[in-house]
Structures are given as structure tokens and as C-alpha cells.
Amino acid sequence: MFSIKVLKADGETKFVARGEREVSLVVTSAYDEGDRIVLEYSGVPQYFRFQADDALGAALLYVTGNVEFQVPFGEQKTGYSPKAFLGDCHYLYASVATAQEIYAYRNQALNVYDNHKNTNSYPHASANVETRNEAVFAARNAIDGVCANSAHGQWPYTSWGINRNPDAVFKLEFGHPVEIDKAVIYLRADFPHDNWWKEVTFVFSDGSTLTAPLEKRADGQEIRFEKRTVTWLELKNLIKAETESPFPALTQLMVYGTVVNS
Image 1: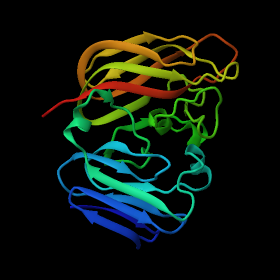
Image 2 (image 1 turned 30 degrees about the horizontal axis):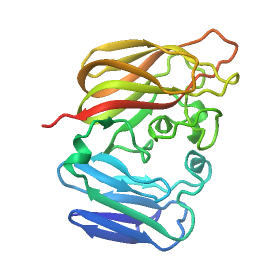
Image 3 (image 1 turned 90 degrees about the vertical axis):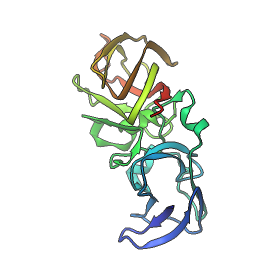
Image 4 (image 1 turned 90 degrees about the horizontal axis):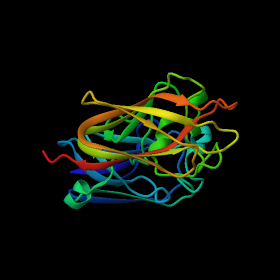
């Protein structure tokens, strides 16, 4: 049994729906600041297909406990489509994922519902620095599936911004073992405002590393490597090109592979 709830800031339940394998919840009022959407689950870790907003669509999440998503308002809203969480009718759902969904070869990094406080669902992105701690430069933007990179700022031109920090590190956690063999990097390409990284290093949870060259390009840059089984990876040693701009940034990171069947 699991449920989807909309909770007020004080914890009072506004809407709820429960089920065994799948749940649909129609929210028939506008959201108020402080509202939270909760996928309430206390069983063994497993995959769910989860949709917290019909404008954002569904995500395939590895869930280890209750998943809470704060409905964004104000500055936090700039990191999402302006259509998201808007109006007085919203369709939410969750279902236990199928084997075909779980074990397909796919982008293991994709999660449009990731956020700073996310501790019970994966994939999850974090970083040691985000430009001015603004929503439009948060680490989560690099795994939300949006690849628009010809400008910078509010959605859809969000990115992971490093605040000019040469020691910036981006971490991607999968929550359990996955076997991966390819990454695709979309650099932010608002040239000449932006710089770009000419070299990046991947550090994997198995102890291995991979240094890869990058080019001044707006399209996805594919990096292939020997298969390895990992639970997380880091992107670090970000070497920017020698230009006048101090602003390299990451628009999207995709990591392809399969879930390890345990």
C-alpha cells in the first residue's frame, strides 16, 4: 500500500489517494505556499513511475522511503515551466514500475522531480557550489531532461552554475548499482557570455576515473567508456577554456546504462 498526498504547511492533509499498484489523485484547488506533495511509502526500496504535475510529466524513481516535493513559489518557481503547478486542477499519479521500464537501457540520470531536500528517491544530483544559491543554477537542473542551452536564466534555460569556482564538483547518485557505458554532456552555450570546459574528469564509485576532452559546442557531446557498475559518479576537475568569459556551466548530464538485477 502507498499513497499520494497534498499536505498543507502545518501537515494537514488537503487531498489523498491510496492504492496497491497504482494511484491517481486529482487536486481540485490552487496550491498555497508551503504545500507539499508526498508519495508516502514504507516498503522495501523499489521503482515507481511518479508524476507530481501534469505539465512536468512522469519520472522513473528508485524510492527508498517517503518522497516529498515542495510546491515551488517565488524564486524557486523560476526553475520550472511556468505552466507547472498553475491553476486549480492538477493530475498526480504513481504506479509500481514494470520490469520493462526498470531494466531498459536508458538515461539513468533523469529526474525532473529532484530537489535539494530529496533523500528518499533517485537519481539525485548535488554539488559543492551553486551560483548565488539561485534555483535557475541548481544542480537538479542538470538532470531534468531540458537541453535548451542558447541562453541562461529562468526555465527552460536553467543550468548548474558553478559561481566561477574552479573546485566545483557535481555529484550524481543512483541509489543502487547500475551498469553504465556512456555519458552525454550539454554545456551551456550562451556564447560569448559563456565559457566552456575543455576537459572534465569523471570519478566513479568503483574507484576508477575518466578524463574526457570537450569542445565549444551546443549539441550533446557523447563520451563512451568500458562498462562499469557504480552507485554514484562525480564530475570534477573542470578545466575551462582560455577566454575572457568566466562563466562555464552545465545544462544537462545524461548517463546511459541498465539497472543491475540483484
